[in-house]
Length: 122
Image (cartoon, rainbow, N blue to C red; front, side, top):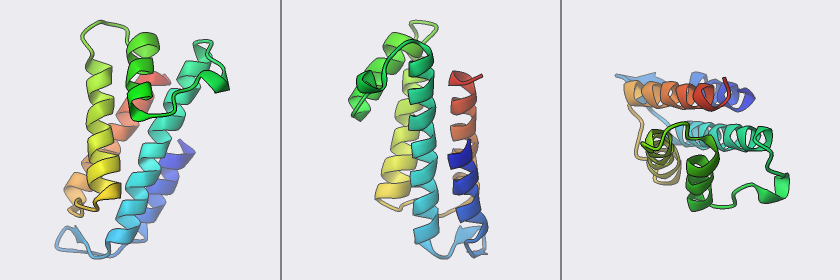
């Protein structure tokens, strides 16, 4: 959760005008930090399931497979889809490409990241 607090701190310091962040840099950094929070939460959940640090995933595909194998409580793939959507939103669109600057969308993405973390680390 410390990572999520750091992400929110980056956003608080960013200037907003007409529901748009004026500078993409802190927004991109916040998205990157939120994505790291999700990865760290997954790592912690996998360690609680008995995996060693060496066995933790090293790629997005690895995380998807680990979530499916170790963390999904049902076979519907809902948790996998949520992670994939957060990967696309936070890491690709928000951090890597810097496409998201509207405050309502940024706020919603942060809420979804919190909700995902709370699901895997109750």
